[in-house]
Length: 405
Image (cartoon, rainbow, N blue to C red; front, side, top):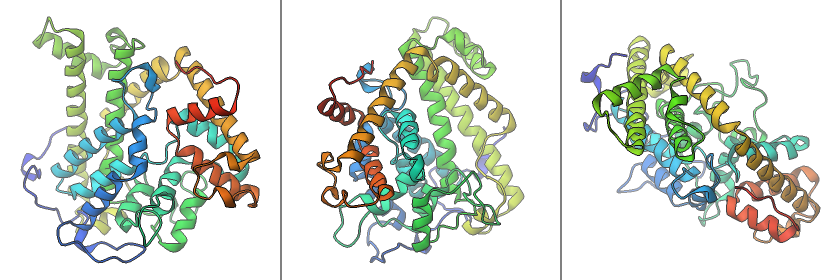
């Protein structure tokens, strides 16, 4: 993919006409005075970093449960890597870097303990009450569950940050009002009654680069962690022509490189190629659309920041490799089964006796609620747990707790 280097915004500080403008934000649900030293999107980013939800990410699973080793990615380190890629893309495309970074930093707030395994288990338990969606849970955290400020619950983020959080993967509604990918989760519908996030349009380009950065980051670091674990080998990477080409390039230049450095040289090239591919495609899409404002980005009928067809095919090949060799590996599946049992057991115990949720802020008011409302509080409590807290809570309530290693 050819890149127009003259159009890149490296270090210039210049914001493109189609970028989100923090000085023209659509505002916050609860109006606040502006800051003398920070833009509105800087304030959002800073609020996100200082939350308890952000700190909890350090003990939440990405792929490998934390007892497996200190150097595997957690949700926190994954999030930081996503934010780094998002900021680089935003700078290259002359976007608002703070908004892109903020959306990247908040995108996984709603994840349960034990990664997607915990989310699947909690979704199963919540099926009679509307199910569980980690994106909707992220919105609940930043609009309701974080209890830090005297004037409001949540973080009172700007419309643009909330829009990016909810729609970074695309519109949730069609133009006729139907669910674009199934029913819109109730927490998102409820919030939009107060603060319309325009669910039928695309999000800002800043949110779009945050979304594609998520793919770039985990495609790369899951390979890195897979190699470290031994579940992946360099020979297995040969199944993906793109990765095979990178390995050949590194071998040609460094024929006697030790394995750890060899892996890193592959990963850094992978990130570079994917980032440059997105920049090139975004530049082509922008030239075709010729947007004159951030609203023109939202009104487009397609994603601007995406992979080329060739890189999209590579992305699918990498995901297929990761699923077959890591995510569905018997050792990982055994651990996933134990993690799912922990989440399911805790949900049932808390539904039967809400007083067991001793640190939940509404614990004294939950017992009298109807089951749907009670289940949502139980989900809030469970989703907020770290892996370590969930294991400890299960051990306190049950005679046997699955061994997750």
